[in-house]
Length: 102
Image (tube, rainbow, N blue to C red):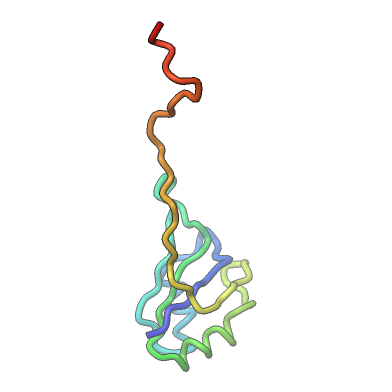
């Protein structure tokens, strides 16, 4: 299987539409649109897994730059996810030290 990154998705594009679009290039194992956890809305990109390397190359060649739901798609080979530093969203510490002590 070969995983492809798909950018430029419309907020209205469904995973089913994404899967059927890529099926024109070959067998699609999975199609996932990445959703924002806070809003539940599409982030405008997703991933498609094609069955073979050849089908993945065909999908890149035929679908990169094509239009879907009024948006231009960007299709290329997905890169491995890198370790990103996690942001800390807890209470902020004051930079001047504690003012409680005298």
